[in-house]
Image (tube, rainbow, N blue to C red; front, top):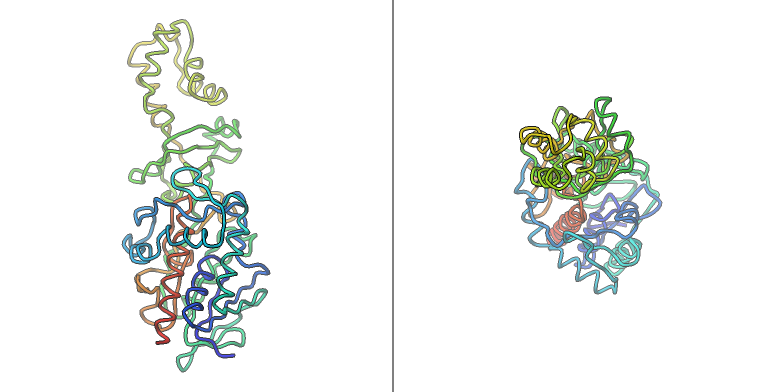
Length: 391
């Protein structure tokens, strides 16, 4: 059978592109080597799928071209996807910071996407090895099928146990497209022996403001100390801005100076650990008290020493040795360079009919539903363009 478009990848972006084009009249085939569609969707958000974020804006994305995502995001918004969710009767709730989740299961989102594909007459073939991709006479040929339009929606290499690979980059290179070096993002950071005392308090979590490097944004959420280093939402967010050699700075209490002075007034015969334990977990308070090493009772500690302690609490600095890699990375940063794509249609400038969408592209969102919104928006952009080319 001849198709108008072949979409490689049955994840969020690929299925969104497929039903958008299919419902507009295009004959669409989706191919994926996985045995299930939407495998990453199924495990997202603790199984409840954080499917979008109401605070979505271009500044919540990382790319060599910070303007690239604006067009697609403005034309397919979180409210558009939410309308689809509600049309399918899926109950949802806002958890925090604009993050929207299913009340029930992530399976509902996958079922919704597959239902929309069925309504658009989309054919989906799973468990299919792509093999070599041919291109001649204005048609792309994949796994015995042919179409004048081809969409790269195979994601990035994060979470390889789910079947993720870097095939998107191989396909892009085949057609002369450039790749921004990929790297794990939204990923835990590892610490060396110089931070062994913090690794020893594995399981301790507390609210922080975390920043990677000197210019990265600060994220105010929870940090988690692990036996390998640092994790938790604030750390995952900061990790996307981290480069080898950068420091990661945690502010444990912006008002640390005031807190310590108040403690000195109220309990002058106590030591620093007791003051820290009033606003930090006990095990963390103990490690910090040992590191700060105030030699006197609080009542005998001069302002300069309290200021030094407060400085360490507002700028606790770590030098990560690396990340936990793609196995623990929620997404991949980098990818297919956006300069070679139309920001409106996601079509390759040099190869008519070739598109790249979703995580395969050098657009990486913050934690909290932003990457799914990019999948929906970029998929919708490509799907709309596929249908338009038919006319």
